[in-house]
Length: 398
Image (tube, rainbow, N blue to C red):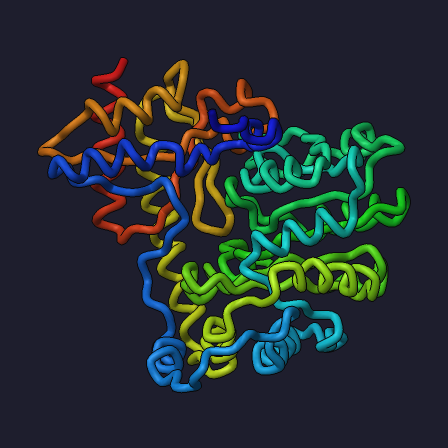
């Protein structure tokens, strides 16, 4: 008789985004065309200079990389941050990670002991929930509202959620899954709260370049003098250069103990991918027009999807300000069941659309029961067709 698996393994959250993939696989095997708006997997090309570096790799044998990242990769990241005007960032402040997801794990492990609390703003990136479960950290969700584009609540409301067990605040800017871009005033408010209550402030800025508001993106790196020991940046190359499969990220902190402890964490998995880091290090050679062109493309896609959703009866949506996601409230009782029905039952000219159920982005699943997240990672004509399919599906479903 096989022994039972560990109790904790049975309680790890299952991604609401990936949970429905077996259903989409079956539909596609049956010849159904699916418009995938469920995952943040960009369809645009990786910079050619990075592809060329991958093709040209000829070092044999393929060795371990240093646990904290190769010098080539760390130096390239330092040059990138300096190009943004953050000239106080030094190589000793940067730790190379296996994508942003590992940096999230490191940040939680470095700042919280078992049973400690970390504030997040709901809805939040679903992986935060899994990481918190791994390290026995309690996420305390501060709600934000669809009606005001998921912007932060007043300072007093945030402070009410702080307890003696609170060790950190974690936020995403631009937001996944909301597309919200926090204002300068909002970020300064979080810095002030962290300073007044002696908390770590962890900023997930994976979508930094994809901001469609007139004002510049407000990075936590602008506040290193205010909270040098408390500020932690989570970063990734996955979406910036469309390198999702290369698994390249970084944790940045002026706190030497955070970096030292996170390096020990990194040593436990020995090494990130040395070829991946060589590819990522080419970011300094990416043509200057690459990112601006992507910004314009995603803004077109954002406008297409947002305007289309607004025209569907019963759908409630706020215009996202960045990243490439929209959170929408659908006129259904259970959005997950609707998403399943889309994949199993709904067909229009043998086509359907796949969405991510919104409950996975909430601490309390009931709050997200009518919500879905849509990723505008398809070209404009495909997004228009996706909206058409969703409109027809909702009419038929009701």
